[in-house]
Image 1 (cartoon, rainbow, N blue to C red):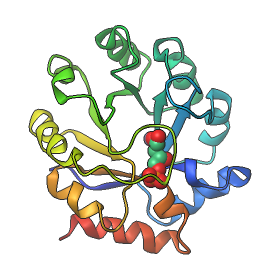
Image 2: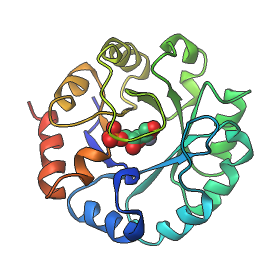
Image 3: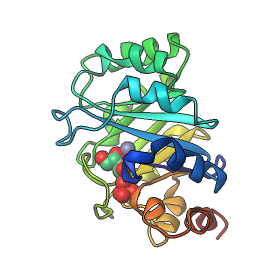
Length: 216
Ligand code: DX5
Ligand code: ZN
């Protein structure tokens, strides 16, 4: 399995101090920064767009992982690539021509990943999997931080690990000290965590406790 990586989601950080909040988790050992982009249509929440990503890029010296939860990802990937995204993931449920969009993201110089909602089968990516760099499996429904992990996602993680070989398999939603060992055992190696990390008194201890899941 590829190296375990921790990707704090800035959705749970203090939005008034975003730059410091990024630097804080990077100093505490974060491997990636996870940026949740929502448009109020695909997901029932509105978060941040390309200008904010561009501004934060200057304070982020690790991989910037941009998770698009928007209805028309094709129309915006170029803006996010220009803003400095390293990895762009989009929902297979939202894209009209996902294979074409994967190609476009790569042509823009970014890594490309597909995201599956909890209710979407891994079968949806059977014929796309060779084209992508990684997969992100939602372990909650998109929209908000602080939701409960959906345990039915564990068998899906196992299936997708078999499909991906040694590429990255990221999970997002409800990841904490208790659920991290379960998803890692099932085959996930990139752990997104928002409220668990940003809600803790010590970012260092929170990130360390997630990394410990990979050592068991
Ligand atoms: C949910 C977002 C997540 C969210 C995770 O729609 O994609 O990245 O920030 O938050 P926690 O870790 O609090 O479940
Ligand atoms: Zn996310």
